Image (cartoon, rainbow, N blue to C red; front, side, top):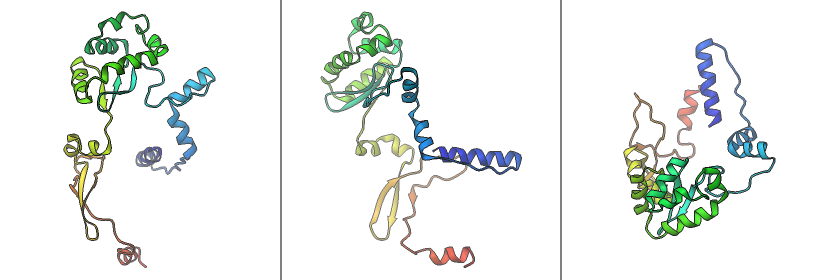
Length: 209
């Protein structure tokens, strides 16, 4: 990701100034850059954060919760959203509960709140709670397995599942191109991968060998 951004930046600089540049991308550097929130927490507290699973490190409730048939991510990222969540789940008393009145308080009582939330969420399937939370205006989404993800309607709508006619394996489906650029086609099929040495003669001819 960082290499792609660096190359695009260098190409833009060349187009604007005519100057060539060297793009230097280190894997360790990229790993540090991806630490983001965790590194800031270490710098400010002096304590290295441990594993949190799916939970956001500083916002509560913002993690995966068990439902009657799976898991759902609920992202109540501020006090207003938490109040909507409380009303949507039929727990208006949470809005005035001293343990939950602010994000710092909810963070202090994260495990207690999670237990209370899951006690409710486990009484019905994910699909039910998605409708409830959508109506309440609370950001949420199901945790899908691979089958659910590739069969989700948006995957087809975005042409993210394309067909390949492979002469050896026969017809198969693969993931499409996530980069959509106006003026360029987004084919619904993809050529099969070439066999070993299949295009050797053509490549050698193109480079003059």
